[in-house]
Length: 266
Image (cartoon, rainbow, N blue to C red; front, side, top):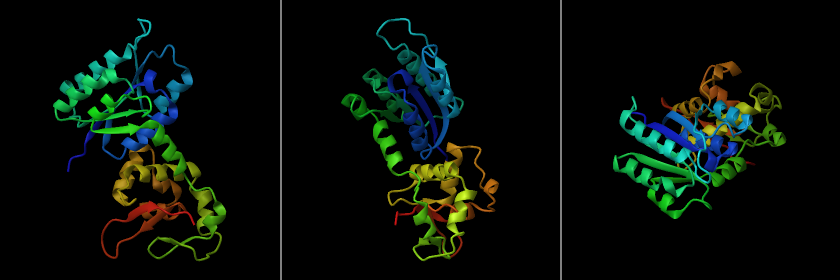
């Protein structure tokens, strides 16, 4: 099955928040290949740190000067960009993501959907009008997204980690093992890399919390294209995942892909 191409258009003056944008990019990495990532705003007024952080996520900054008081000049530019992508994009865009709480984007959402496109709206639920929420295929509450990401982050209780060990199938249990088994892996696989894996699992997992190894690897690379498990001294993805205490790996009895989920806290 062909991979869906995704275009993300961000009304930054309306939903501008670095935590929101990072969580949104993680969430979307599980639905397809993000071929367009653009944030619209008057970048002469936005601080450099915000701009640098957006660019670190691979988001292109589209400048539009504020010429009329009380009006968001980016709205028209962003709408025009979406219509342009709809008709002239060199790759077929299957999903459009409109990051804004502004009900003025309601006509754009309906137009895109009339062309058979899936349309996601990402905004803050408490400030996004019902007409925009109900017009799209899926609404992503940015506030809730960040809250869930924070609450399901990397486990930091290393004492508990030392009491777990991988079984022959790579599933952690509570039997005691030498302290250098999982504990030593903490020095080999840095916490930032471990957080990357957790973020990818959260983005790609199914309703039961599981994700296949190939899909997980693909999602990790969407979040961080520079990822390479061999840099951590592992010859396989499953071996790399075995070194992460927060992750549980289950191998099939015969040929097939591994199944990965987040280990429950003990």
